[in-house]
Image: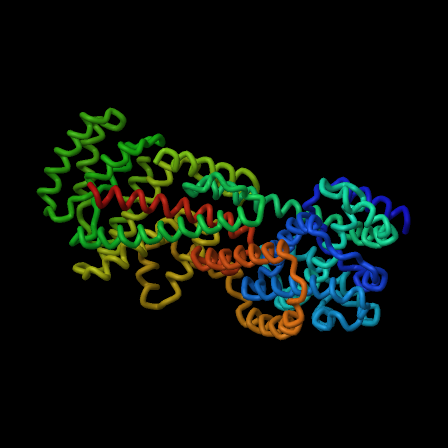
Length: 371
Length: 208
């Protein structure tokens, strides 16, 4: 046990502070028994906790994918609540009575779990390993629930696991500071020295979940990378830090506003188009034929401009198209080629009958070939 | 405008090169616009060939539907929101015929691909598990409010904000309720790019 713990302690100290230490659900009960005299949390210790509970929240969001969001706020509550609960109850050790909800969840997880071993008395050992296996399974198949029992079991076991994880996260934070691997740990080193025997316990949990924590970190980094991308994509969003929770919330807010405004614009524009065109027909597929890949916006605008001839009858259309096309050819050397204009016009004649969808598809095929 | 264009190209290249789906995607936003416009026009023409003299509401619906389906078919089922769009379009029977006409000859392939995606498998289970969680967590919540350090409180408030906003975003992006967070971000990226293309194309159509 000791060499394992030593390796784990080293790995924990090496890792960055805002690790998802993942699923330290293994010796939770043992820890309750041992940590009867946990000193109260200091204010500075929560700066570490700020990081990890966020990741736990993200993990919840991730792992509860099959049942998306409504239980997540619920589990947000018990995460927070059971933390304080844990702290307040620890000095008076009511370890068995403290977390009946957790026990209920554990029992449910044990019942639902496909991987549950036969005995339930070593619940702590079996269920956390089950849930860790479950969570591993969640990570391996992030976007799909392959079968319903799996999804339900994942659903129920994950909040339990995550509740336990958060509590153990906090203790792990204290332990980390005790090892002096964090920046703000100088005050708590003396206090955490007495926890050194507990360090080994927690370290062992960390070992069993190291792969999980790595996967968690990878996932977290992916999410942050994409948040950064979204930040760049959405205008007016570049200054907030995406790493903090508040930064993430702001970025999400901006993204939501942007998507909503874009959708509203689409609605507006489609209404306008519907009113402008008494006949919703555009006869400029031939527009696409000469286009090269590099299409500047101005060119695009001017190319789209011949689109709008809805009110003009076909003959007049043709005439004006010819004129327009010559005009455009003069102005934009990119695609102004006389022979192409002629070919467009001939194609247009064939394009101008809209009686059958077959003809439309034929024309589209011609266009594709020409492209 | 150019900023958005560059952002579009940047995001598309980045997200596709990292670990996206293996199908090749267009890196050039103007190419995207061209493709979208072409498909949209084809779809519109197919619609109008079906039924002339629609009133304004129908035209509006036709315009939107054809635009959606055009872009979704351009994605060809590689992104989740496109599948969701097609699934939504083909779900109601009155739209279904129209949508299938718009999609054209390749509609059957697309619809088949869309329907085979494990899309909405877990509604009932969600509701049941939600109830279980509510019951189990309510007792825990009642015991909570003893000594709540302010930073943890702020932290949890921020977390809940994020969860709320993620929920809203999931309702905005089509097909977003069933994704995990990572794919939600990807889909949002793609969806924003598509919305931008759509807005640009439609705006240049109306203002010329």
